[in-house]
Image 1 (tube, helix red, strand yellow):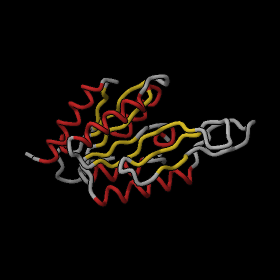
Image 2 (tube, rainbow, N blue to C red):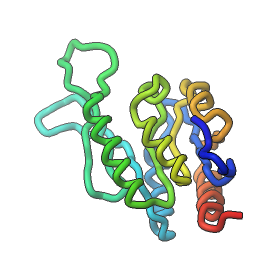
Image 3 (cartoon, rainbow, N blue to C red):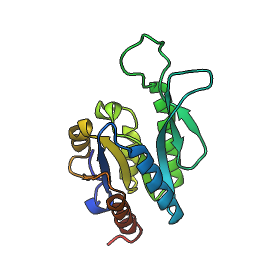
Length: 184
């Protein structure tokens, strides 16, 4: 990924919140999103939550729009003995299209639940992240510790890592959103 011509790196910020698999990153992103929305920011993005569909015992993961307009399950039901990744590429493609439309409608910041395996392999929501950067929209997402090197390779020096700390995350959000609103 590269900066658009004539761009200042500080005006196209990316940040990844580093977390371990048992850390409460989903609730932290939800809290940060609520706080930013209460401050009047126009949010685009998705948050993740585990749900148990009616009549089932196995959890599914749903991505919920920060604009409250939709929710989508993103894991495939592959049967009880299936192994391997259950991520539904069709659902992720649908989510990407919806997020792309949200970005085109305008946003102050994009918040995404994960930079994970799919993004590290070149697909998933990667194009949406690139779209936001090219539009000058700050991007905040969660990066599990085992995907940090892939995250760093993806952003090529255009991003930073944030701790799993609400105050540090909100401070970063305040700074980047202010920089976008009043460029030098």
